[in-house]
Image (cartoon, rainbow, N blue to C red; front, top):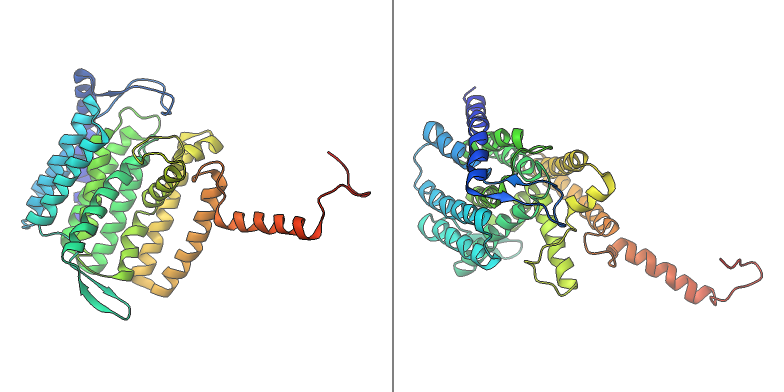
Length: 367
């Protein structure tokens, strides 16, 4: 019963303050103007992430409990929120954003003591990571923070995927008896849902980098809380929970690398952009990605609770389908085939070379 109260309280707070945040954004000029890379066609207020953050803070005040690591998480959150507000108003360069993220991650690691301390590998046993643990933690926090930001391209997409992520964390934390992660995942799920009411298509406000960076940061830190001492195989769980942003970011890195472009260079070939060209509907596209995210979350629960082998089997099938579909719709770029299609294409070409001269015969018809 208390869990429902926490969720509804934070949801109500976010819903109540979002209209005021919208007016504030317009007043100070923190707006998102349409351009050729964006799908909206009118000026939109940003800073919506402040609604989520304020609801999160009030949720902590009324339902949180003292925890020596929360202070570090909160300081890091303020750093991330500050960078988002500045970016929504003045457009920060990617380098400055990363500096803010490094600062927030440093607070979490060295002040909060939240980092990957050891890993258990098959045949090698438990290995203490020390400095490598710091590096991997930096990589995880900054990577997930930016992954959520990258999928924030359609009305309600990032806030909805984040809500699904937090609810999955809540379920897993409840099953494992991790009351800290359980409580704050629920607080954040309610906060994100309340904002989603105004952010779903047609959106009345955008979360901006204020919201996308904060959600990415807090998701990365909460997921670390349960995996500070991890087995190699346990890394699958947070990656599965974040399946959509993780794979979208992975394919974006490969796509830009193949083209010799900087990772920071924006394009219009993310999963949501490409699905939009097929569906011609923001709502259908967003709901489709919600569905994909729920599938990933379901697999993470199966893997953690039901059967590791079953979870891994489903994961392998998902991976094959993902790489096939990614190449099919052009996530790697228009001129790059997925592995399975490339093999098929190569086999077809070999048949032509070895079994056919390529010249027109009596039974051939020239097009």
